[in-house]
Length: 352
Image 1 (cartoon, rainbow, N blue to C red):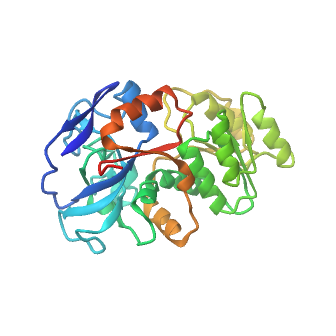
Image 2: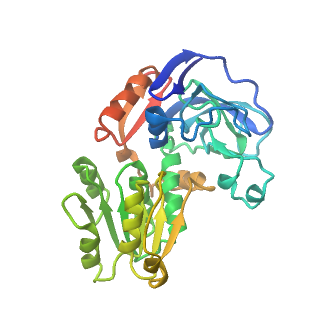
């Protein structure tokens, strides 16, 4: 079969590789319909390895070269064991988190924090391929009214839903989101469903601000021209936002979020970043602010699918590009050259 494999930074190759082997009892094999390009994929392509290990992964044993891609939908073609709600031939979406199942965190249901864990497409061959091996426990069968293309958005949408859940967003809250990329938009959609009173976004790209305005955002600011902290403070009765979600991973913005959120408010760091953050401890202690990290999702993908199925969640505006897998290497180059051009790009091995 064909797979788009990562060999190193700026080195993606469309190659013929063996079919996935017969799945182990905790695995399934899925024929891929669509797979989204994630910011993590772009970082690995541009300057990796970051989350890809150069040696064998401790849980999966996989090592580069391997196909990227973890935001997938498709059809089950093989099961390693019987599953109560999944059968061969079912259309599914996959939670791509590998987990050991026996550690302290796994036994508490916090599989996304498993010390040995990893993701399909980073810790094992991914879904930029015709078929992919995934965790059997992570499969969710798709209802008839959720198509494969929209289902491929469930994984990034689950990141936003998990962040909003971690933040404890309540009806009537005011929320500020830093960054209007795919994760920022996912946070916006989840916060809107939570019934927020005010929903503000800081995003430098005009095209993304326009999209966010169409998604029901109260106001989208250009941080290069506006003092976002001051403007949101004024618009919330000189109180400040109840919650600030950083969806960028930029260390300086994390520090800014702490001084922006209201007294007693909550900061959630949802962007995957690198580097240190400096802030005055008094800004936390004297104003009783809380700072939380949020990692991926934890049983959130089935929630996203239910929301899609009931019509409460329409994420179609996120998709700005659809390409054949065979064009994948060029798509990555284009995305790196002009990140403002697209919000969410999907690849398919089935042809267009």
